[in-house]
Length: 401
Image (cartoon, rainbow, N blue to C red; front, side, top):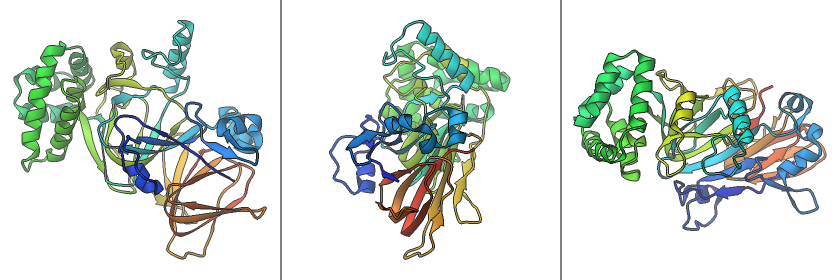
C-alpha cells in the first residue's frame, strides 16, 4: 500500500475553502478546484517506496503486472485506466461534452497528423480515450445535465418574456426533437456576439425575477441567473437554459456518458472518470470553442437525469452502478468504533479515499496505513488489504472487470 501525495489544480472556478476544510489545511486564498488522485501524466500522484517521492505513473510503468493486475493490463494496457478527484466548485464550470471512444481516437489521430501541439489552446483531443464520468456529492451539489424536453424548455424560455428568445421558442415547438435541439444550439452559439450579449443580460434579469417567485422552475431559474452573473454576455448562458437543472444531496451520484452536455455549478464531490482530458466546450469559458466539432459530438436527445444512489452488496460495500469498464466506484461506511473489517478484493488496482472519520488499511505483510479525512492510498493488484474504520467513510475506486 502507498500513501498518495496529490496535486491541487487551482482552476478559477474552484472554491477557496472546500478542499482545505476536508483536508484540514489552511486556505491559501487561491481557488482549489480539484485534487487529482491517480496516474494522469498532467498531475500524477506521488508515492514513496523508500527512495523518495516518485510519480505513480512511473511506478506503474515499471511493473504494470503486479501494480494493475493481468486482466486490467490485457484490457487497458500498462496504465491506470481511471482518474479519481475531489471537485470543489464555487462558480459554474464550462458547459461541455465528451466524445465517445471512436470519435476520441479519430479526433486525436487527425490532430496528430496536423501537427497540433498537445498544449495548444485550440486543440480538442489531448488523448485517444473517451471520458465517461461519475460525480458523487459530498455536500449539496448543483449541476446541469442533458437536454430538457423541447416543449418544456419552450415554456421555460417563453416565461422569461425576452423578445430575442422567441425565435428559439418557436423552433423548439415546431420542429422534431433532434432537429429542434440541434437548430437552437447551433443558432445560439453562432449568433452575433453583440446581440447575444443583450439577450443574455435580459434573460439573466428575467431568470432572477422568476427565481424569486414560487414556480415549478424556481431552482432552475436561480441557477441560470447565477450563470448569467458569472458569465455576462456568454452565449453559453442561453445554451445552459436548454439543459436540465439537477440538485444532488450528499451521497447521491450523477453519471455522464458521451455526448451529454453538462456543467457543474456549485458544491463538493468525489469524481471518477476514464483517464482522459478530452473536452468539447459549448460556452461559459474563455477557452477555445470549436462549434463544428462540438455539434458532431453532442447527442441531440432529451433526457431525464438519473440520480444514482448506491446499492449495498452482501459485505456492506455500497456500489454506484455505471455502464463502463474503466472504473467502478463504491463506498464503505463504518459506524463509530467499528471492529469489523472489510476485506477488499484482489486482482485489480485500487485507490482508497477517506472522506470522513479515520480509516485503517492492513496488509498481509503486517503493514498498516492510517487515512484521515481527505487522505488517500493506492493498493496494488497483488495486495490483500483489510479496511476498517472509526466512523469512517471510504470511497474505493477500481476497475469494473
